Image 1 (cartoon, rainbow, N blue to C red):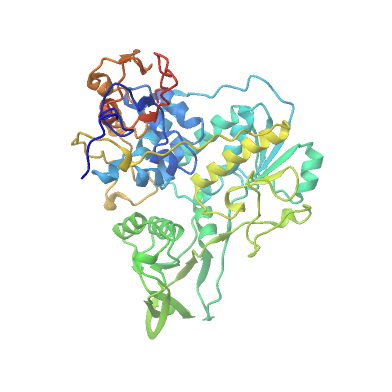
Image 2: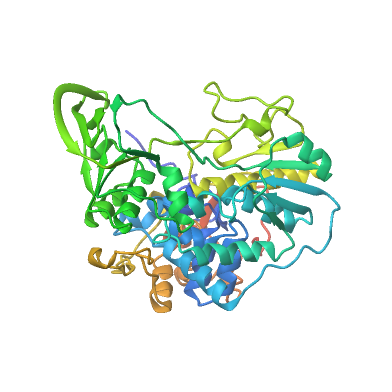
Length: 555
């Protein structure tokens, strides 16, 4: 028969209860929210949302700018994995983080907010090859550290694949140009129409101390298709580049796009805007197995694009395309069925992926490529096998998105700065992440996500921007939907819940203090904290705790 041990302090276990001796004490601490954890660019999203909620828009913008110099751009083109990680997904719908970032970026352009120039010049000189998202980001962060930076790019316009791979109906050219101009205003030189032929020679002749390679994947992949008297055949990258420069390729009435990625969807939607009667996508898998995001296919179909799923081109004779019907096997791979259809097509655009131009690297010693010969291998510091040559973005093995490229550029810049200064980069210990399961939500709010207005499919007959931004009222409401996972937002729940009066408010933005002489470790504050910004830490009884606990840092 079990009996109660009366010599133990009742309720003073490390878990719960009160008594003469506390086993645990509350400590305020900030943790990593899942949105920040999910962002490839490493944005401090939660802090930006807290500031936006209060209407402190410039501070919120500068919080985004601490990591990503292109918020207006990325608020439009990023596929926002942060929203997939948002804890509100478990309740209703994730916070519309991208719309808040876009709003702040647009406001910065309208009000001409600028970044401060570096207080000290280091005298070091860096060459960045490629004016796309990764190159621009690396140059931006290197300049903030006081280095002299020049970007060289073969194109006539800066922006890389953001300029030539993303149509204007998704990213207006003036928005991208304004954010690039802000980067230039920091003293960064962008030299256009300059193709780097011999990297080591350019490094030597330019007197550069380090190089960052950020060349985008501008070369479209090809495929062999048996053809006789085939019509016009283009690659999607060249097609989007031409239309991005204002040219109008002759396509005929019926255009087929071969591929199932986001580029294929953009190409088909662009072709429709060029005035073709029919734009069709031919893809060998089904919708569930396509690489494109689902909403991209939805948008394309809404605009009249016909998607022929489970089809592959077998033969071309003039305008007649013989396509074979495929089936998806148990392994998710398409298999032929021996059944065929004929489609009438005037032009074919191949959207089968892209490669990077690497001929400039032939003279670089120590450089290594991956086993497919398509990417440059780098170490954990983003440095290649050649000392002082770093690489990122499309040039290294990784998913190819603009936001991942931004993350590469920021990481490379931090490591390049340390290398240039012969310093050791201090890596921060990754904080504990608090997701939805870690929250102590004792309330449920009716706070539906704010959705952006958009042009109707019938209105999408030119390159006008399709998606419109939210209003200031909507932005502040949307920011208020944040659960502030793992970080205190000063709701006063702990202050009101403490039965001993051990918690003191320090004022707005200053957080709280705990009087450990009064605290009994009852867990009331811990359980009341909806964001899980309080941890109960074990106390060694022989050590007397000070009256004042370490003050929390409000995020």
